[in-house]
Image (cartoon, rainbow, N blue to C red; front, top):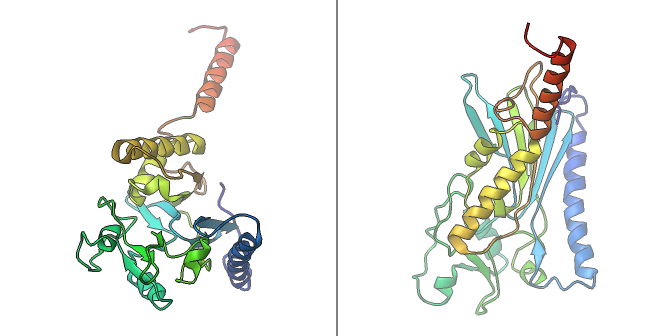
Length: 278
């Protein structure tokens, strides 16, 4: 992915239009799903959308999929930044929002009476990994449903009356010369991998496909080791080339195609020079 050359000030009306379009798209998709033959009472989907126009990057998020950015600092170190914030009951603001709809927020163990009632959920997803295995969930009053571990989604119509809505949160970023990689992924990728680790692994590669394969492979391995199952593991990744040079990690591991191309070049040069050393 090449960084564009347009100025972020070229069209002051673009961002509001993009925000409106992204919000409308999510709400309309939710409405169309509810009207379709598909039973969405207890099934649905999260959604992460990254819209790039020139250097402007607009990210909309519903649920706990995630977009992240890897950049390089002046000293050459890698800096990571989340371009979205997971919408889960770990967030105090999201807990308070769904409570206004009448939801209870409790873990499964709290529902079963195994764990005392509390809201001491201090895990900052993305920077930390939740190793507890029993996250806070959304429940109806005096009922043991729907039990969603996210506070927004497309679908999940039983949870919609409890505040699990399809309206996205939207973040904006202007791509600059320090940015190197942009990642959008489902929560299966980073259930056991932090945002920083995702970026660090990606920047070991020069080929986006190879970087994706590495992250999918690492995620799958950790799922099997820890839970003997997997969640959805989906990732889209793009490298951002800085002006006039290769990005961080671009020369560390060449793709197979690059290596084969280099071999072909070497053979061609050898043939041109008589096929051997002089």
